[in-house]
Image 1 (cartoon, helix red, strand yellow):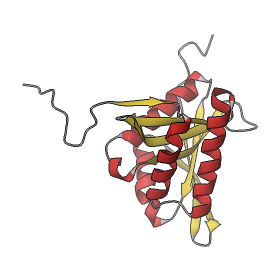
Image 2 (cartoon, one colour):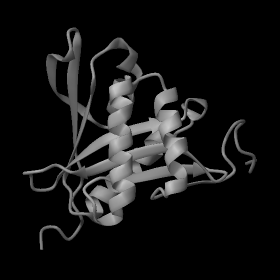
Image 3 (cartoon, rainbow, N blue to C red):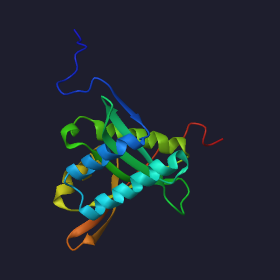
Length: 177
């Protein structure tokens, strides 16, 4: 016998959409609240988010938010990698700490991958820190099918490696025509 009840804490309704100016403060608040990012990194997130809001679909940075109950609870930002053919970067992904572990990050990543394919992308690159606090993040990427492609010791700071993940996306069915 199946039940239509949702698990405790599950959202009644979640959707993914491009952010509007009214989402800015919520996104920046949860980016900071995650505790993962230094102040200078939060400033970069602000710049990227502001540029994506200002330039919209025509800009380099494309942002999307996961929204529950009218409030942004997750954010992902992607864009084509300059000087490549069909490679895209996922620049930022963050989920409100009180919503982590509920599939929002995975949903945002799958959405981003579909958007990348729609835009003619063939590969995704994600860069992250090698610090121990990022162990769950790296496991998350691996679980979603990303593979560690490179590790550069002491990149962000002494003892903080840059870890690069990549994933080849399935080409559209008619790509060979």
